[in-house]
Image 1 (cartoon, helix red, strand yellow):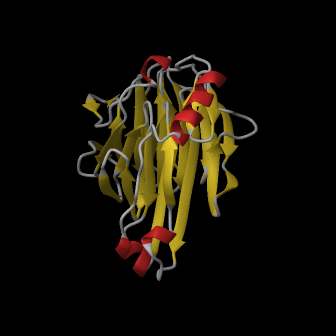
Image 2 (cartoon, rainbow, N blue to C red):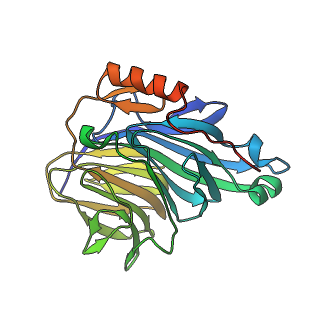
Length: 285
């Protein structure tokens, strides 16, 4: 059974006027290979707004996968490949930026006009050097398309990788197991994870007992590489995610929305973006 290396509370960060909870990176931990960043956005939209006034407008990415798990409300995606999709509660927005893509992250017209709850997790997954300059793609995955493993007081949705013989829907360039979980109070579950995988658990709501330690709301538990499963026990009704994956073990150079292996590649990414080589997105509302 894996033990806890450390428990890190999320920190408040201001991202372009949006106040978010950020468990990664923090002062104690720059990254947990292959995971580079985790943002937890929980907000109430007041209503009376226009879609073009809310969310994040067109911006480029290269070299990694920005992934969004939607827990409440909906997220609207547009990109320079011509893709346009709305991902609702329980769904996942999977984007591989590859050699370059420009996208926007907005919210549907009805939600911003009427107002309502909005909660999602966005995390960045690094890509191996061999894949960084491949063709980008976007894959929306609905709640219904996400395999569910249900046992007693536990529900686990398998987004990527394989859990108890069930395979997730999202493709990755390095081995990963990405789960969304719901555990009723006093519920227990064992989650098998390959011994070589780095692993973390982030609690969106509720509290868990792991390795005899309490992991509270907005805490991230980083696990040691000392076992082949994680044992969770809920001390309250709990919503959590598990991010685990084989370390890529390559140099990481990042600048804003670009994640490459060295400074030269970053300079090329900035230049290519300025020249429009990562595509153009003109939003229509």
